[in-house]
Image (cartoon, rainbow, N blue to C red; front, top):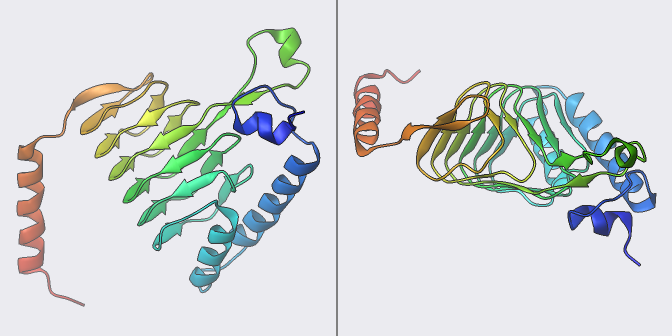
Length: 206
């Protein structure tokens, strides 16, 4: 017989709140409470808490409080992850985030889904679909990423987007529903390389 946790992670219908899920959720609540109540002098402690909370992380990460998640143990992130204020990750299914990923304020990553049929939905059965975000991705403020979405590598998601379908590599995508606006080009790279070189040439280190 499958457990609710096994069904949850398999994308099948399950009921939240059973024994193992309740224990995982309680641990998540404790660790996020400690994280959100920490101070700016405790950056190392914050990293320790997130590493205990998440399934796995890269070496460099920074999340601005407040942060919320359901379980944490279903979240995997790569190196150099940054999430600004009010990030929410509902991880009833696996959430996999690559390296060099930036989240603006109030980004929501939601794997949870509920039955369309009201009678089944009212039984409190639910399900989840995994979300994957590639490497070198910038997600703008107030973006919503819906269940089952895959976002490719080297992608920019514009502020306020509602991402309901997969986004390919090397694009800027915006809107509700989120759609590809244009491809990121070699001209973009050259322009920003020039500005970077000017910065390092002219800046006075303080």
